[in-house]
Length: 334
Ligand SMILES: NC(=O)c1ccc[n+]([C@@H]2O[C@H](COP(=O)([O-])OP(=O)(O)OC[C@H]3O[C@@H](n4cnc5c(N)ncnc54)[C@H](O)[C@@H]3O)[C@@H](O)[C@H]2O)c1
Image 1 (cartoon, rainbow, N blue to C red):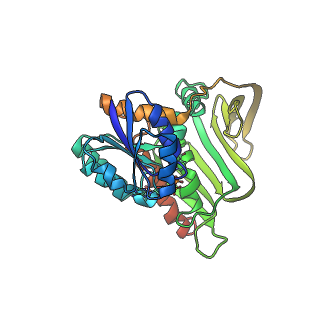
Image 2: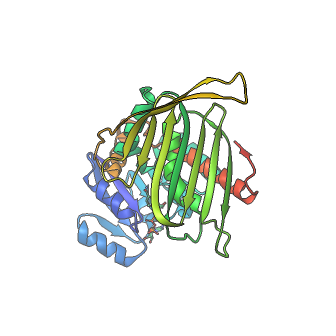
Image 3: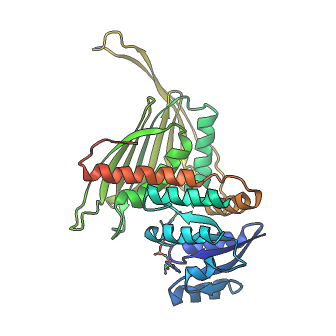
């Protein structure tokens, strides 16, 4: 049985608490939130959980073995560092940290102390992403050629981070998990329509050494909500629409054969459009998978799926995107 404490019961914390409360081999003992009204809500919903105002009380509690950090991004590093130094296993909400340097320090500290460090990239545990991983690793789509994601809506303008830091972590975690290739560089452009120079629309391209490319369109200023990703292989193409209630993944038997390009002015391409297949997906709540993976990784001393290296890879691309945007789309090499 793993004794867990959660810091942060704001918007996302209640989902974390609900799932850790019912996770096997887990005893959720304490939740911290600085706001009295949030603590009152926990006391009403989960009377067996002890509530405290300050996250440090959880970090320093001798009976707590693992801490979940569900607070705003700029607080992740300091809380996680304190928890690791106190000998606790740590699950940090996404994005893992505000910089690669912070992520590296936490990874090193966890390794030195022999502790589990994990980042909650919830989407990896969805039935849709698990199915897409299976379609890619079993060779169904063939060799992957591109990843093209659109995540736009009339969203809440964040005061501290731009639209890529807010919306792209989900897509970047999916990309990093599905495509095992290493990115070599990125270009990003964006614009702020407010006076604080925090971009509310941004476009980012991640370039790979192989013949693969990934593109992201993120916006808080779209009249419609779109959560759509295309992943194309040379055998089949996947359309992932997260707004579909159940048929989120469609596999298109669509492709083309590049016959010859001896004469560069006349490229010969044969197109193929065939059936569309809608695979059955697991309906299990993704966050239940996150909680189980964290608890089992600690108890069995194994690496979690959404591990700290994946969390770092996401922060690495976000940090580079920031540099590229501020340099008018300049290519930033990794
Ligand atoms: N995995 C996902 O899909 C997903 C979805 C939404 C948010 N998130 C992440 O969850 C995290 C929290 O986001 P949110 O929207 O819930 O934020 P929020 O501001 O709504 O809530 C944070 C809460 O933490 C409390 N808090 C902060 N520091 C504390 C401390 N030291 N001690 C005690 N309480 C403290 C605040 O009082 C607040 O209630 C962020 O990292 C965000 O990116 C993840």
